[in-house]
Image 1: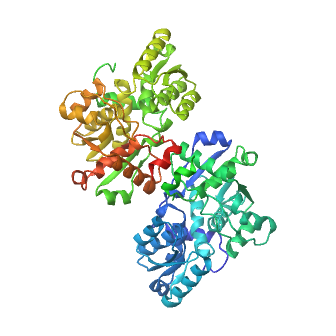
Image 2 (image 1 turned 135 degrees about the vertical axis):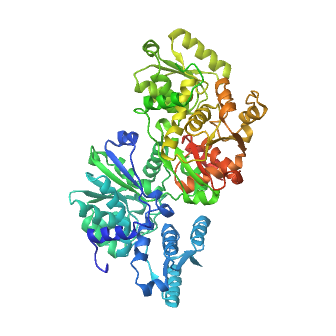
Image 3 (image 1 turned 90 degrees about the horizontal axis):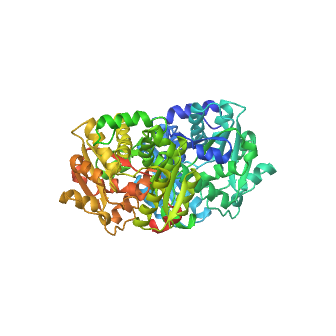
Length: 319
Length: 319
């Protein structure tokens, strides 16, 4: 089950399964932002999700669909960010062991969060090679199931449940916009949105300085993320083969935005809506504001991906 | 009407009157903050109110209760903060002229907001004397009605409507906590809460370095705010004679909190709830966290007064 390319039914089943464990996050709007944007925007606020990000949906789904044998051996992943915290909490809520490999330069606040959820952390050098080899050693020793942060159909189905909820409340949307990093949120969103209504346009937004998904999409061949450099630190990763296939199939277009546009969009949401979103979440609104002609007078859903920000770094952000 | 000490009926009438103009703000809770605090807290989120603060309630009520003659001549006030923006917007929504006296050192963002709402701004030297004399000149010339930011029964009734909404949703609260500056929010909250249920305790929280309400309350005589110095810049003002009388009558206690406690409470709300509140709003939670024995296992309502923060100053805040 779910070893194949998922469809809307898989996402609906995932939604029923994870419902008791997740928050149903609110859908918010701002008249002032609508005036500025020239369209009608509905924000699906996954910054209010458990662990502060949509990642908790995919991690929960991956854990709930383990076999009993797999549950006994636990789950494992390498991550310095929201996926680590999401998997750790989802595991704890289900009485399952979580092994998390974290680069030793991860922010203290993330290390603390993951440890606080009772996961077993192994620190390694901050390189992809060290992360992967450390994880392999742990998986070999423990028999834990590896849960990839995005290139995993169960995770993708979990992430798609945010769009399901958004479209339950606002079925008349013309466009749904999501940010793209590894592509888990985007591919789940695309399958869900097109499955609900094939006329809905699905647009991705990506930082100019981490535009591997844009390049891959336009060239129709995989282009890795090389030296990405953006304030939107949740969007640094390359697509996976599974997410890339879905994105090529289902996504209508990818827009890129500058760092200045990301910060301006983030400031707008903070100031006008009084909610805390992380820079990666602002990329979608930045994409709308940079393409007003396309969005003009449309009903637009935006997935706000998360709200985890290091407060001590804010001074540099809003100078 | 409303030239006398108000009661719960006055506040309920005010609520019906202003309902079509205000946002009904959400009541939020955080399991994590409840664990830390050892009690069950419900946050009434006036940071999501129009103009980003509860002040819009009182200003709207003051405007809606003007006579037709008074409406023709407009309203006037002096303020560098949320009350100016609130009165300007409430006036514009009702087709009434607003004259706002602002000290010339007011933050640019506040000047812009007030101007954006179409108010006529007169700048003056940043002293209380200059503000009052400039306002007097304008009132004499235009016949506008002066709307004091807090020492005004109509304004007090408007501010009390937030507690009415909170108690409609959570009628079983044991305690309601509000911050105190000039006392408009606190006195409205106290009349409303005691009116709904005389067993509800009403507690105020105030910065240690602006503790004039605490001093006045304990000594049972008016003590002005002398050189207040706190990050909670909405709480710098002294009580008025009307608010002081109500507070002496209805408030059970006033707790003071340190600057460090205010910042810690603010950080907690930002990080855990992902909502933006201004430092003045954090004072109430700080008061709860600093008095855990009193609040232990109680059901506590907290009025989050506003969410207007200068983002460029955040770096200094969360170092």
